[in-house]
Amino acid sequence: MKLRNLKSGDEYATIRTENQKEEDAKRINDLSKIEKKIIKYSEDLTAGMQAISSVRILLEIYRPNYVDLTLVDLPGIYYGDERMTGLIKRVYTDYISNPQSIILYVTASNNDLNTGEALAMARKVDPDGIRTLMIATKIDMRDKMSFAK
Image: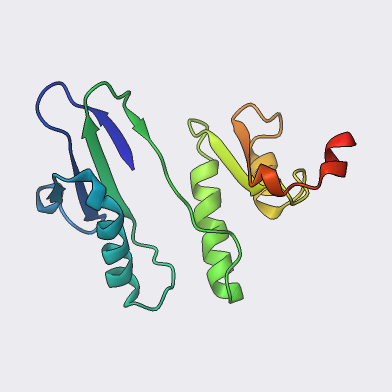
């Protein structure tokens, strides 16, 4: 997803797959419809199989007073079969190896925050943690005793 500063005019978004030309992108004037459009593109790419496609969906959102920013949302690292898990790990490695990337390691806070394969992968390419930021979700589910440690 790319967030883009809009100098003038009404906010909008465009969506396409990486296989489509920029001029073939669909314009979305009602930003509340973005989620439905992403779901539709995902279903089309995976033939409704709730699988993962290697084809990226490119979403650009144009709004006033935004700082230009690109975000890449990767799937969870584990999948039902080893072949798919291997593909996901290769995609992770491609993105996080870029020294210009900031790595957001998102994990539920009721997990051990210092373990996990995604964190191990981040530490391999960013051993000093300069580009890695951990985001702990579900903080309300964390065992109270673990805060005392």
